Image 1 (cartoon, helix red, strand yellow):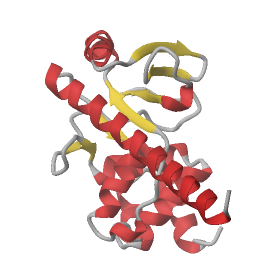
Image 2 (cartoon, one colour):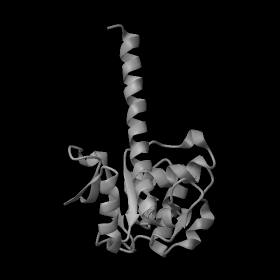
Image 3 (cartoon, helix red, strand yellow):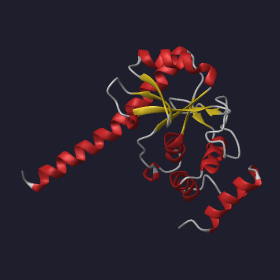
Image 4 (spheres, helix red, strand yellow):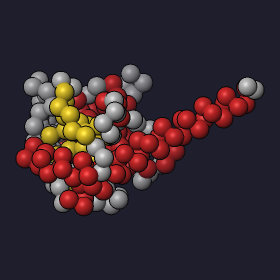
Length: 196
């Protein structure tokens, strides 16, 4: 097979992989909307939605679909998402909705519970599902709530998302005043040393 055909196949697979994640996000949020289950898109897709408002070229693809739900709405969400082809699973890594019975954890909608700490050592709990922005086709966390979550987790991918928001001007030094001292210090660290 000629080299250009390999490149075409690789490009097509890459495009399809991105499309599958987006389809999963839209199918899940549509099912939750239809069932009236309060939710908010969090994580990389929420960051991408905010970034796209300023600079589409700066949007970073992500394979993760993270949905913020209230724990008391889990049963309703499970029923709604089952109708859309998702299968609920509780695992050591957390609660998730697999995209079909044979799907892997990377092909899932991952649940983050609203108003709870993701890990016991985290400084603050996650936002409530009412802290949302509705200017996209699905509910996303407000920018401040999203930044607060990213500063709380502060893993390398969270830092990269925060740097993306800083790079396009959605965040600046004035934001440090919005957060508790420990989170403000993390944001200041990124402001002082964006190259890591």
